[in-house]
Length: 152
Image (cartoon, rainbow, N blue to C red; front, side, top):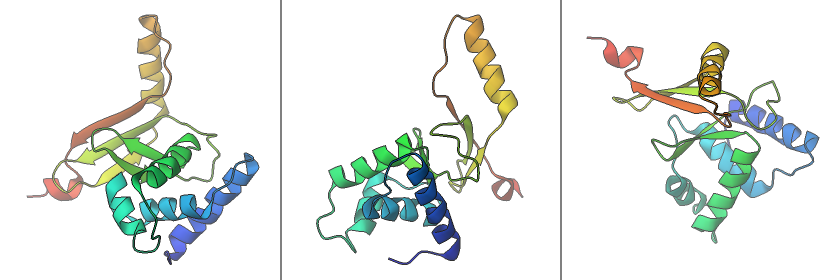
């Protein structure tokens, strides 16, 4: 399965990140990550499974979910809970597994934009602390309309 040059570069980066952490980006994990990165929209597990079956005869839901679990654990993808779908997240920085992420989801066209607003993350952490709550993973999903969809 061939990917775009941009996706291939991201997969090389993901492989290097995994190697530096002492874990392996297997062919299946690489293929699932590549499918997510190639997608223009968040991708669901069963869509990934359907696309995998084109090249992997024995692909089954547990196969996909194990790969997704690994990619989530390594911080190479995010799960958008409201959509039950996944988006890629590979940057030049090694967030070593998780970072504060906020997503803006267009309810009209489905476009998703990830922002990494540290001020917003700190505000949430401070608010939690005031209530005696220790914050763990915090992913914020906000829906609205993108600039293209709000144009008259």
